[in-house]
Structure formats: C-alpha cells, structure tokens
Length: 158
Image (cartoon, rainbow, N blue to C red; front, side, top):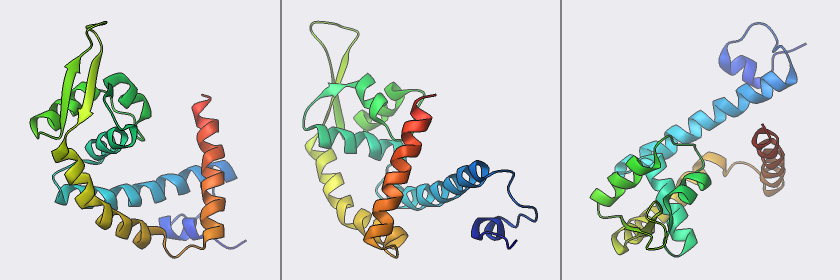
C-alpha cells in the first residue's frame, strides 16, 4: 500500500493507526497552516486571530452583545474573554457597558474605528482565502464544508 499525501508530508513511515487518526491529524495539519497564515495577516493590522474573531462577531451581530455570548461564538475557545475585550477596548476598537438590569452582564460593541479596521482587512482577507483554498473546485469546497460541518457536530456532542 502506498503512503498517503499526509503520511508523506509528515514523514511518517508506518501507516496511520486508523482512518480517524489520519483524518484528525490531517485536520490539525491544515488548520495549523491556515491559522498561521491568517495570524501573519492580522499581525500586520495589530490584531491577533482571537481579536479579529471578536470584531468579526460584533460586526456580524450589528449591535452590542454580552461578552459571554461573544465567547460562545468564538471559532477558537479562549479562556478569558474579558482580557481579550480589555485589549480591544484599550485600542479603541470596542466599547463596554454594564447592563442596568444585571450588573454581572457586560455588553460589548464595536466602534467606528473597529469597523474601519475590518473594512481595511476585508480585501486582504479575501486574497488569503483565495490563496489558501482557491485551487479547489466549488464542488470540492462544498463537500469539504459539509464534511467539516458533520465533524463539528460530532465534536460538539462531546
């Protein structure tokens, strides 16, 4: 049996122990390369991947939202959403306001400066998406998206 693309890429001599192992390692390998590429772009704009993710969520929401809800919607889990919001607030990219009804709840909103930064990032980000996955057909991308959706549902059930 010939080595798989991933096996060759990792320099792995023996076959993977299972298809699940190969799939999981393949996901980790690709995710790492994608995350690193996005990270380089975001650093050019003074952001981390997680900070960009917060701003993306807030822009998509279209209004203030509780900090804990932002944390729930993050692509990557972060242990301290408060620290992340603190850093964005110091940069003037978001504002915070305590709820009048429940003082434990902090609402976060994106500022005009934050929206402007995202607008600047939209073009370069689209270029990175194209650079990373533009070589795949629309059919392959749809299949990948569907398979990743099933994988996401499986890991969310844990």
